[in-house]
Length: 394
Ligand code: UD1
Image 1 (cartoon, rainbow, N blue to C red):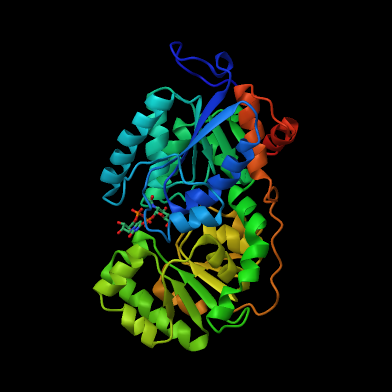
Image 2: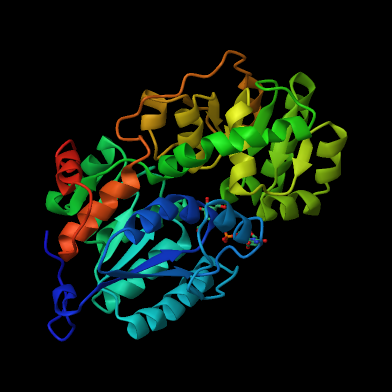
């Protein structure tokens, strides 16, 4: 695979090192990108820069998660912050372009599907720097999700596309993306999970809440489609209060959701109904709670994957999922999005059986590093053949 660059720019081979920029911005990016950044650290002849757009800026969503993942402070923080989709994307685009022009990388690596992902991929492509996309090819088919727009456009802008499940390659092929750009490498989010699972379990955060393993439902809700409409959030809160009558409910609340619940005067009522409303947790604490939950109710993407890797029953409160492999091979059930379906959430009291999803084995970051090294002509300690062979699975 050869990357396309404009003639006026030096090629990686003409420098004594290759320059790589990793762009991160929001909580799930850190979890997905840490294994890639760490795997690339072991490569000789690479200078890498980690750039944090600042889309997430609260300590609980950012600094604490970075520290849990043993990532050093980012080399640059762009301070983009919150705003409308257009504002947030535009600010990240402009600020990230300045970083690229300054650092002149040979490759920009982006992950996932948040606004920062698209903004940084677009900035790089516009100044002719090749883009690699970690977690390429996921599709929900729901164009009303901001993440779906981000996924499709980021994939279109990318020259290296790293996928975590076979159906991703099918989506990319259908959209006309040449197969030689696509590498089936597995799931970097599960690399992080496997690395920290033991430590997270030793934290036993459920004990601090006075709960027993498998006795509680862990809830996360933050999608605009669930929390931004008052009447809908009100109906959801009512069902959560009912759920708390059947089992303890632990609800680490995203800032967006907290603000909306407060605005409709529902937060206090949820607490009165016994729902344990907490601040968002850091990565290790949240993984700890996930690992011992009897069930998880969520509208997140990544949590469907983590729950499946842990084998914990997951109820996804959405009409669609871009991660069907978690249903066919994992522990995920797609509930739909009518608030009444929350009544269907049930505890699984038996010890969970982690799902064996191909290539979700803790080594996806190494495979990505191998492909990047071979593409940029850098020496890599590990076997490039493994990743290339993996790409032929799709
Ligand atoms: C973003 C991603 C979503 C991802 C989620 C994980 C997009 C379009 N969405 O959603 O895909 O699942 O991150 O959490 O990129 N806020 C704070 N502090 C922060 C960050 C946000 O208070 O550190 C509040 C602000 O009011 C902000 C709101 O949360 O307006 C939403 O933040 P934003 O980054 O726009 O999207 P998320 O809902 O976090």
